[in-house]
Image (cartoon, rainbow, N blue to C red; front, side, top):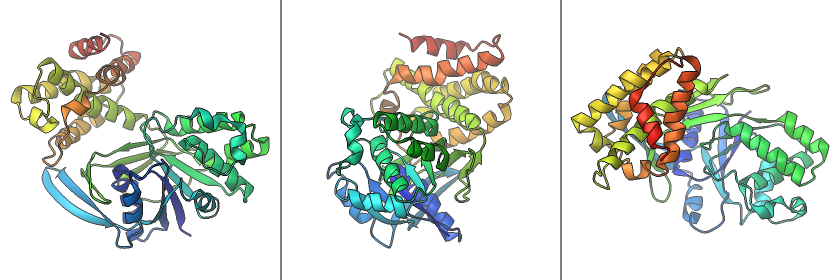
Length: 375
């Protein structure tokens, strides 16, 4: 029997990630999907996108970039999405589908999407007819309605770029349930029958297509941490099921993201042109060699301190290929936003992690960059 998916979020990232993976799994004969998409934020901004998802011919995802040294470009018509609903207009339909036609929930509502609006903490909200304002409150209302209609088990796979996103979402929902004075039997069902996994997503989706569709790089990863009672929903080359997300997180954060932050620091210090891209900056031999030297002399030795050196070396090669994508215009002005916070999360956190294992190691470039992030 197919495991049907309800997806919160209409973003181009989800179109070129989850929706594409499910489409390819279905094409391979796996029983997964279809996907119902829920537009969870109010407003008419993406109304055209919601309508376009109903087209049975699907929507295009164009994969462009470098893969194993070759330039590739291919288009897939994604047909895993069967319908899309605006929660602010059809909340009762969302409630019915969530309770009766959903086996898996996927979300990508942004880093601030887990915030709970003040008005959603009202205990009377659970009895009202209107949908809550914030995503966690919407989800808790839907969970309560599902419980009241039969309490079928459920799998939730959040894709937000939040550390331990599954654990954080469960904590927020449980606390909100306490705020709403929810019954203990419902909270027990939520604790034991609703599985929420931590996940890590990684794919650069460079641009949207109108009215729906996306352009993305070849590289893609969806790492999902196994938990008790978890059943793998489908198989795909870009989907990894693991008992530990830490290696995937460290590689992405301290190689790909750290490299971006090092480039942003050079861009800011040298006052380079405002619209310069990663690819353009790396075409300068001095800068390219500087980044490769940083990876070789400081980053990779840090990973060797945690017995991940071979993985780090391979990931550096892959990262440089992604940086060189001729179709990707990744501007340093975007990467440099929140620069000091990113330095702490990507550089200082790397140094702290390495020094837990080998405190005697010294990385002068990274130490200088971490110190600059404090000013």
